[in-house]
Structures are given as C-alpha cells and as structure tokens.
Amino acid sequence: MNAKLSLGLNIVLLVAVAFLFFKVYGTKEGADAVKTATDSVPQLKFDAPKTMAGAKVLYVNIDSIDQKYQAFQDLGQSVSGQLAYLQKTFGTKQQTLEARYTALQEKVKAGTISADEATKEEQEVNTMYNELAKLQQQADVLQGKMAQQNATITEEITKYFKVYSREKGIDYIIGYGTGSNLLYANDSLDVTQTVLDALNKNYAESKALPKPIK
Image (cartoon, rainbow, N blue to C red; front, top):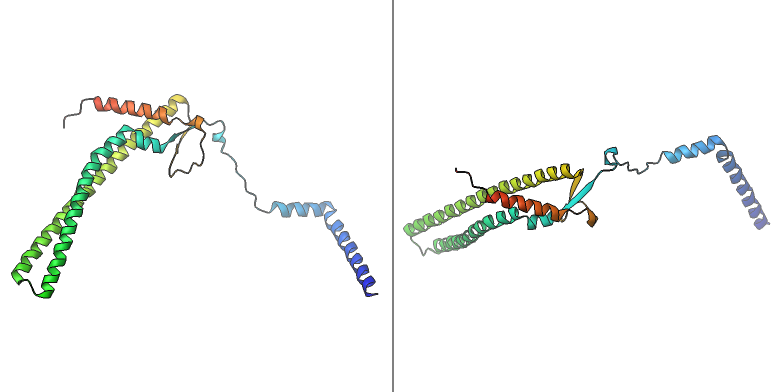
C-alpha cells in the first residue's frame, strides 16, 4: 500500500510540474520573460573598429633591429668599452678601499696603530672614497649619454617608418619580438630585412657626410 501511495504521489507531482511548465513557458509572456532573463546575462563581444576594415598591417622583428641595425651596434661598441673600463676600475678600487677600511678598524680596536697613523690612514681612505664617487658620476654621465643617443636612434627609426608607411600605403607597422604583446605574426607580413637594409643604407650615408665643425 505504501509503495502504491508513493508511486501515485510521484505521478501527481509530475503532472503538476508539467502543467506549471506549460502555463509559464507555453505562453508568449512566459517565453518573453525567459528571453529577457537570458538577455540580461552579460555577453562577451568584440567589435572591430570601423577604421580597421581593410587596414594594411606589416610587422618588424624588433630583436633583429636591435641586433643588426649598425647605429645600435656602433653605439654599443663606443660606450660598452668605456663602461667596462669604469666598472673594472670601480670594482678594483672598491675592494681595496674596503680592505684598508677593515684593516684600519681592526688596528684601532687592537691598539696597534698610533693616533697620527690612524688619522693619516683615514684621510687616504676618504680620498679613495671620493675617487669612487667620481667614477660613479662618470658612469652615470656615460649612461645618460647612451640613453640620449639611443632615443635619437629610435626617433630616426620612427621617422623612417612614417615615410615607409606613407609610400607603401601601410596603416600599421607592429613590433614583434621578445617582450612584445604580439603572440603570432604571419611571415608574409614580415618586412624586417627590407627595413634593416634601408636603415643601414641611410646610416652609412649619414656617416660618410662631413662632420660639422664645432
């Protein structure tokens, strides 16, 4: 009896659910309500700007530009040697300074150095410290000069891109390489070698021009 009662109750509930479903969703108002509820869920959409329609895009490999553009190579060679010398000199003098300062402290603590000798040694240590400070200033000036020249080279590249884009009817030239946000690029759109050839040709011609008298 209990099993029959349970079965009968389940059938009644099933019929009631079917009736409610038809009553709510079987009408136009119910269907519209469902559509409205669905439409209210945020949808991810991407609409390409109208200006992108038919846009012509090319790219260059920025790593190749950095490595193979002669202007960058010349800048690196001219500055890297000076920086390397300053860094090596700074490191040697710093080690000597630290050793003499430590030895002075130990002698003063042990009482194995006179007051006059300690004063003289302290003055020499201070002189070495000042020399280190001057070396650091020279390195800072050199790095600043390098940054300025690098900005000038980058500006020349940008100017060339503008001319190239105008002549070829290109809308965008994208940089592709280490650190860029471009995840994929079709090789057929790569104009790196063409750009490098033109940049290096222009740079060689500019180097051959007489330098202005200062």
